[in-house]
Length: 345
Image (cartoon, rainbow, N blue to C red; front, side, top):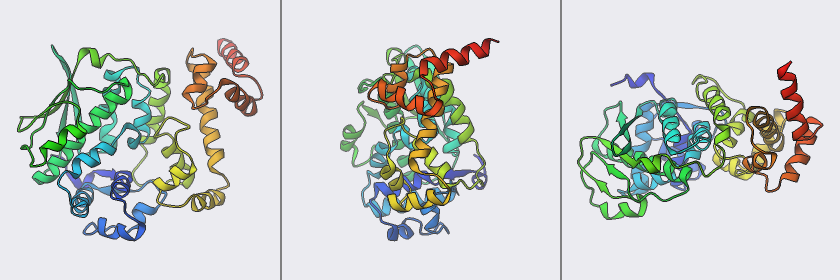
């Protein structure tokens, strides 16, 4: 077991819990009861962190507030790839299901350092095993184990574009009295009271290509993920940095200013006021990210301009070409040719 006082967890997961519970700003004190944390830890735009003990206490409080024993299933259903910040961008940029799961396993300790996922391949396929590095009560163990199974399922289905019904899911906890609800959340059968928590898929499913058509973005996403996830826990990010992280948590174009503001527990007007003080705006931040990723796609991949446009959230290539000319003063095709010719000199 690790010394949990040395482990720090991003506050973004507690923000997600608060949203899932439908809490308002005035209700956050109840969620944080017994942690020693103030509401601003969830309201601040800074990239704040908390101890593992504080995170576990918040989970206990959340179960009490929810008043439903199956809260772990409901929370786990919310833990889609996009909720893991830049790690989600990396997962959704992987070439196939197996590489997405390996990316998730590689970077999970940077997001939830009290846990790890080990991946093994056997004669039947690929197995993900959850390892918890903390001692917690059986109810919290069950909650985390349910979240684990649903996170893996979400990755597999998001990347493959298919519902997986033949996975082999084994969980250590006893069959709960609400076990009849499991099929509403997990699409494959579950075995209880097993030695390990595992989620196993067939080789065919592990080889499923990424339907998001972003696999050529993998190296770019990996670089972004490494750079952002490994920033120090004590670093306070500006509102601009925080918006960047939220935008990178999903394929670009999916989140608007209202979505980002809601994720920060503020209004769109408050978000813009804070960005105004930093001399920027939501549109400027989004445009900067789009322009940077567009340039890197053109230089580091052989994707067509049309595919890059779709990858970056443009519905039509002509709109992308117009935006690119505004950013760089030339067409994407001419930019790619010029930069590659320069690189060869």
